View 1: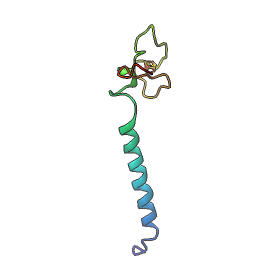
View 2 (view 1 turned 90 degrees about the vertical axis):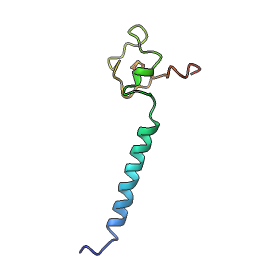
View 3 (view 1 turned 90 degrees about the horizontal axis):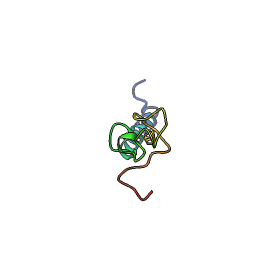
View 4 (view 1 turned 60 degrees about the horizontal axis):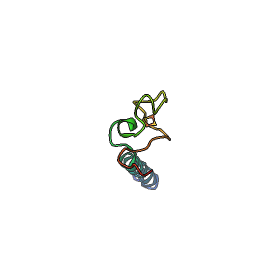
Length: 70
Ligand code: SF4
């Protein structure tokens, strides 16, 4: 019953892959603070009318203040 590793090895591979992917996306996500708005160049009431501001976690309009060329 406990000796059959053929079920546990694929489960361990899938679990470790999911953990690695989660850590990678958390590490590579845009924004430097807790919220995207904290370093977005549109973070003002006149430049951004989105209801998510100033606590957006996902935003397609996000532009980093440190990357003004975009
Ligand atoms: S554009 Fe998006 S990230 Fe930028 S301030 Fe507005 S809601 Fe926040």
